[in-house]
Length: 316
Ligand SMILES: *[C@@H]1O[C@H](CO)[C@@H](O)[C@H](O)[C@H]1NC(C)=O
Ligand SMILES: *[C@@H]1O[C@H](CO)[C@@H](O)[C@H](O)[C@H]1NC(C)=O
Ligand SMILES: *[C@@H]1O[C@H](CO)[C@@H](O)[C@H](O)[C@H]1NC(C)=O
Ligand SMILES: *[C@@H]1O[C@H](CO)[C@@H](O)[C@H](O)[C@H]1NC(C)=O
Image (cartoon, rainbow, N blue to C red; front, top):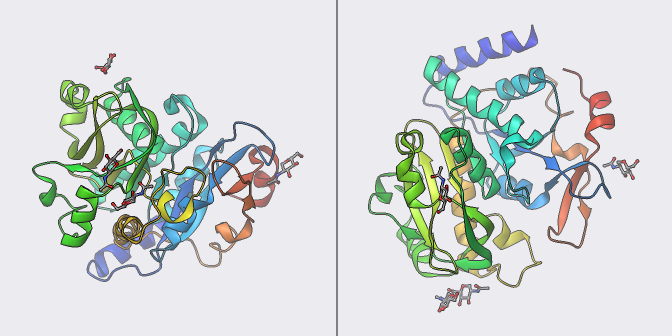
């Protein structure tokens, strides 16, 4: 019932104020299983939360292994979703992938049916998940791109994209000349595999490529042509917030680039008018959880015991 009225309200807001931006966007960040259960059975690296917050949005952690009704309610309440990077080889069958696909499908369906704008952003594993969902087959190839920062090789038409058309020249110069995009992946989408897939070709625009340590080209930035869906194979969130690898660039320019991507994603979320029903947002916000200083690959992480704590805490 609450779900229906929220949708209805969003619809009205959409029609009434199509020009006024939503200046209190709330973005869902998807969690994933922890490799070790030391701190909990699911986690979100805090850098993704800070990335979103740095551009003026609040964060709601999205739990894995929840009933569909939870994800549907979150979709109707949030203004965008971020699929973070992580260590899985095949995200598609994971709880993370299952939850991600629900958001992806709902984002497309509600845009098709009502012009309802809901941005989806995938970083590294998150971009791999996007590509796997769209292609509906295993299109990823092995790439050797661990712990290295590179400039982007922007494609010919990149200026016509939503992502880059309004980028300041200074940001584009940094992006295309300096080692500011941190890579940490052993899978990637090659231009050849992209071209072979009609599902991918008809859905995404390729905005940049990179060459891995063995000379293999992979696609590093994509945006969907008709939907606010974006993927980056590199990690914009790490430059200001992660310190474990020496190859992460912390320069002024590198941090500026991070801010560019965060600002863009959140500006997309400002075009979404979904909202939580009155009085319910607080209990979902990330502020209910304390990040842990793990002193590992991620400096800080949010941890969840998905099976116990959360089912009690959240009612949906
Ligand atoms: C999850 O459960 C384990 C084992 O009971 C506990 O040590 C850990 O602190 C819990 N984590 C959270 C985030 O509640
Ligand atoms: C993608 O490329 C790799 C090697 O570059 C190949 O092994 C794999 O089969 C390709 N997948 C598809 C679906 O084309
Ligand atoms: C960061 O970028 C600057 C400017 O291009 C470069 O001099 C420096 O080597 C880079 N640092 C890393 C860790 O890649
Ligand atoms: C970027 O890093 C490469 C090595 O990976 C190095 O050859 C190149 O000079 C660096 N570029 C800049 C601008 O620092």
